[in-house]
Structures are given as structure tokens and as C-alpha cells.
Amino acid sequence: MSNTAQYATSGDREIQVSQTGYELLMNSALNKGTAFTEGERQDFDLHGLLPPHISTLSEQIDRRLAAFRDLPNDLERHVFLRELQDVNETLFYALLVANLEEMLPIVYTPAVGLGCQHFSRMFRRPRGYFLSVPLQDRIRRILAHPRFDQVEVIVVTDGERILGLGDQGVGGMGISIGKTALYTCCAGLHPSTTLPILLDVGTDNEERLKDPLYLGWRHPRVRGEKYDDFVDVFVSAVRERWPHILLQWEDFAKINAFRLLDRYRDRLCTFNDDVQGTAAAATGTLLAALRVSGIPMTQQRVCIFGAGSAGCGIANLLVRAMTESGLTVQQAHQCIFLIDVDGLLLDRMQDLTQFQKRFARSPGDVGGWDLSRDGKIGLLDVVRNVRPTALIGVSGQRGAFDEESVRAMASAVRRPVIFPLSNPSSHSEANPADLLAWTDGRAIVGVGSPFPSVEMNGKLFKFDQTNNSYIFPGIGLGAIASRARHISDGMFMAAARTLATISPAATDPDGGLLPPVAALREVSFEVACAVALTAQQEGLAAEMDEGLLRRRIRSKMWTPAYAQYRRIAAAGP
Image (cartoon, rainbow, N blue to C red; front, side, top):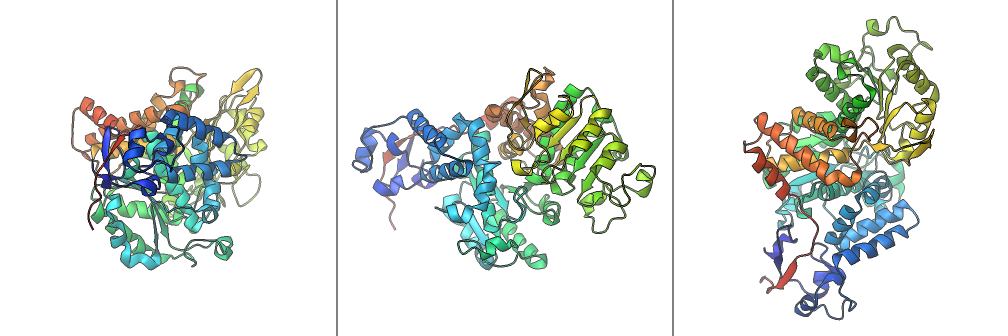
């Protein structure tokens, strides 16, 4: 394997390297730190640059883990991991894989939100691409660098809707970096095949624009035709550079999320994680919860609090799940109730987006309702009149699931399913401990960010994180391994059903709704297999034997380990 590839892949026992001394130690893709062998230290002029002890990868993990645990808060831990990634990527991923449950909330939600807010202040080394509007005419040239020849998946954001934190401008790059890291530690995609990208179209965040340390393009957020032209130049350049790329859209505002997905989903292999990944995670977890509640999908009444891209994406996939279970599309729509900032979606409301209109209610639907006040139909009104079996929150509104509404829901349903999914934790619609208290321990709870376990009536309740990390890494792995041309709603439905099938609750009503975070690599493998098979069945990928397909997917999963290095002469100018 040539040195230009930057990394050792999972099958490499020896790679050829031309860099030496400080240059080699500064290459995060090749650096082994204190794990360079005696022979390598001699051959690559490393003697004197490293302490004499030769460490194993396991010893390095233990050393970094101890340092990580000594840090006082999550922001410092997040910065610590980002710096480790920039110094020694093999060790970074080995540390994550070995301690996934402990590390995931730091490299991803909720701590990644802090990382995005402080991105300009914690910036050390470049990672991925920052493509700003002033660089529009140079995008093709920028993407042409041979360093990224092996890229198979891109995670791109414009930073406008970062978690529940809003517009973070250039700080949104933290999300793209975090998601690409999860592609590696959860699905095993090799680091050299992942590329985070930030489309810097400016920001409307006045705090960022006034910050003298802000690193982004200091310009109000570009919109309209100029925005669309910039995105189109980017997508066209990506297709030319990597014809078989998987492009993941991340944290775009609702005014763009569905619109961009609809525009490009048939032009390349692409998906929006906030729309489709969140939908599959929520639907899969809900299907698992039905094993506990005993209420079939055809009898579900689902209230979704938050009618943005995530809420409407969940509603769309639930309609598919309900129709596959026997309902008509019209019947399925009647089972879903979306609430936004102005209350229950009604067709008389102004400025509804096209995807919101599908779920807006007519006056006849609510004509006989008993309302607490005229005008806005709020959560409590919906709960009292609909008696929902499931309540899903994707609003970013802290505490939106109030005690009165939750108690009203629990009074009509024996095992209410309640998922406050907004993240970070500070934006969750409810504290899960409160949900248990208000329902006498009967609520079936899923959360978007980590919360501590709670003991109640002598029983320990753990809260499964209904997180996209259970879905999107496997989606990407399956699409890439099968060379899928597009990603369909059927592939996301297959991912959701797989998640429900491997849920501990599938065989034990007292089991968790989701497999443990430590098992995410195996979850991603099973999701990838289901996604790839569905792609074949839908004619979106070439057919192959299922056994061969599973072996092909498994072979794509890199395990962080050091290869041996053999020195070669540097290439000439």
C-alpha cells in the first residue's frame, strides 16, 4: 500500500511510508506515538523524539482513558478527544471503540453541542473542508486534492440548525466531524473514506458575528437563489469528484432540509439524517415499545410535538409503518397529530410548508373538541381529545411535556409511550425521571440525550437513548457496501424494523427498548445488511448472494490497529 493512502486499512500488516521524524509524528493518520517499535524508531529517525518506553496500543488506551476521566467537565473532555483525533487517529478510534458507551455522549450528543458553540475558540488543526460562498468558483479545485481520493461518505452541514442550539455558523463543522467519527467507530468505515464539510453561507447569529474570535465568513446568512446556486455548485462538484459518493445532509433548517432532499435524492446516493435518520430511530424504537405496551401499530394514536424536519420525517415514516401493518394512507394520516409553535397543525394556518400540509387538520377534525381556550390548540388539548398512545418530542423546547399533559395522557393509556428526543439534554421536552413519577412508573420512555438511571418502587429504570447513531452509520455502511444508487424510504423502514427486531424488548418485556450503546458496531452491521438487501430488492443495487453480501459488509468494517511500517524513499518533486 502506498504512503499516499495515508492510513493502514484493516487488512494491512505492513505499509510503505516515506515520512520521517517530526513529519511522521505530525501526521495524525500515521502517527503511533510511543507505540513505534525499536526498529521503526531507528528506520524513521525517531530516536530522541520519543520517550524510551515502547507502549502497546492497549497501554496507550489506558493512559488516555485515565487522562480523559481526570478532566473536570464535558467540554474539556470533548476538546481532549478532538485533539487526540488530530494527533493520533488510530489511538482515537481505538479508545472510542473500547469505551463507546462512555465516549459517545462526548464525541456526539450532547457534548458536541458545546463543541459547536466554542468551535472558533477551540480550533487547532483543520479537518475536512470549509467551503464558503466567496470560494464558490474554486470548489472543484479544492475538492480535487489527492488526499481525499478514497472518500466514500461526506457529512455536510450549513450550520443553521445545530441540535436545539440554532445557527452556529462555522461552528456547525463540529457536527460534521462528530458524525464522520461515528461512521468509523460505530460502522467501521475507514477514517480515510469519510469527509466532513461545512458550507459557510454566513450566519444570522449576532453573538457569533460580534465575536472577534469567530472564524467563519462574517456575513448575514445567504438565502434564496444565491444559496441554491452555491449548494448546486457544491453537489455538482461532489458528483464529478466521487461518482459513487454517499452524501449525508446534517442540521439544515426546515426551510431547506426537505427541499434539498427532494431536489437531490434522485441525482445521487443521499439522505438527510435529521429527516430520515431521526425518523427511523424513532420508528424503530416505537416498534420495540409496542412489544411492551401491547397496542399494535394499527391502533396507535401518535402526537408529535415539533413539526419541523425531524417531526415531519417521523410522521412520514410512521405512515409507512402503519400502511405496511394494514391501514390505508388516509387512515394512517388520521392517527398522527403534529403540534408546532402555533399549536396543532390546521390547514387554515398560513405559511405551512409542503411537508407540513400533509398532516394539517381540517376544521371538521377538531370541530367537536373540548378546548381549554379559543385559538391555539396546545398539547394539553390534543392529549385530552385524542388520548394518544405515544408522545414524541422533537421541538427543542425544554420542559414542553408538562405534568398536567403527561398525567392526562397516563389517565387514558395503561402504558404511555413518551419520547422526549430533543438534544442536547438541556433542550429535552422532559426529564425522564419526572415522566416516571407522573405516570406511577408506567411510562415507556426513550430519550434523545443521555440521562441517569432512576430507582422507583425498588426497580431500576434505565433510559435508552433513541439516537440516530443506531441508524445512520448502518445506513451508510449498507449503501456503500452494496453500491446503492439511491437511498429510499424503504431502506429506512428496513433499518427501523431491524432495530426493533434486535431490541431486548423483542424477547423480554422488561428488557431495554434498544441494544446497549456498547453493541453499536453489531447493530450497525445488522442495519447495513437489511439496508443493502432492501436496496437490491428495490432495484437500487446489483444483486448478490446474501451470504456474500454480509461478508462484503463485514470486510468494510475497520478495526483500529497499528500496522508495521517499512521506509521507502520520498517521491521526487
